[in-house]
Length: 227
Image (cartoon, rainbow, N blue to C red; front, side, top):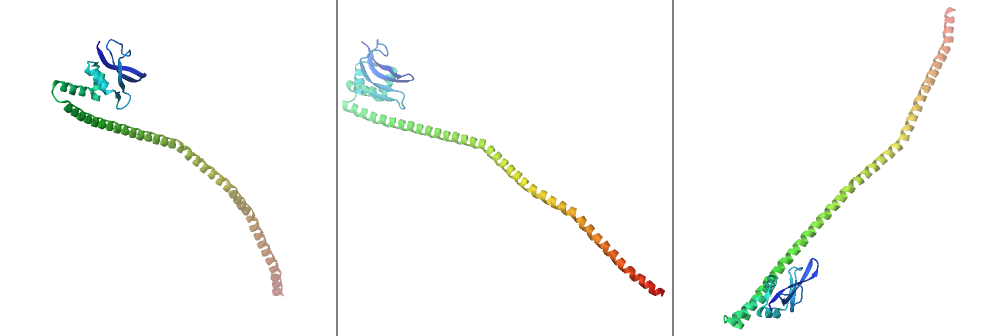
């Protein structure tokens, strides 16, 4: 019986989660399996891999053939590296202690590389979040400026209308004063000639009286001259 290590699809539509299984190569992809070895979730960043390392190594050593995706997962987690080192022990290339030391060094380097990659991803996410926040603030400021610009003309028109109303009220208040002054001027103009005429009549009467008084004196002087 040929055994394969492959993925079985689970999860929601558009957000798949996969089980890593050892199964008969003749069974369907999502059919029966021999053993579940772990899970693979590509929806996170970085992807989440939960693998039973020892059981996966066992199936690889007994001849189970991984698919391309599961081979990448097994290489990433160090299963294929450990198999390679153990095969070297069997061939006499190095001792088991040397193989384990190399494997431990490889794990340390892999952990460091994963940490750097995770830091880069976190930094990228933080930068993207900061840019999104700045863009949102800019959009909000633009909207507020548009609202202010939209409402400002109405305020100016209201102030102009109020100024016109105040001017009209002042004009209305000044109109009766001007009319009263005009009426007084008309009355003065109307009465002034009568006063002047009265003064002229009085002057003429005074002249007549003076003439009348002077006439008897002149007559008496004439009579005296005749005698």
